[in-house]
Length: 158
Image (tube, rainbow, N blue to C red):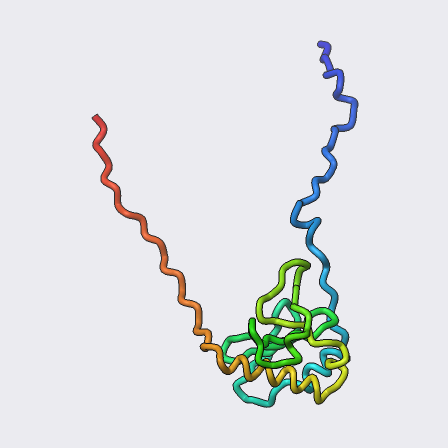
């Protein structure tokens, strides 16, 4: 008995070139904060016992009543001083953009000269702490209620 082979059976299967995910092409890899920047930030944190330290975007940050008010981001220190800050030096600071073109309202980047001065950095983080005190506390997010399906009456089959 003879078997008839398909004419393309001996060729390697064709594979499509890998498609790049549109989102993956826009994602920029974030770099770790330098240890000396983290150390300066840690020394400048308020000693208020109600301030909590925990990461935001994977970087060291501080929160008051659930509100983020300061942290590191890559090679920068950022503080939250509000959309219309009373803190005069903060008005000249550049807005914080975790992604280019996506500024976080009320957050600014601490200038390098300030970040290198422990006393001035403490003042900036202190201003952010004072601003955070004016914000309402964030409560725990309510648990989602399980969805229930409405009973539907089935018509008897004829």
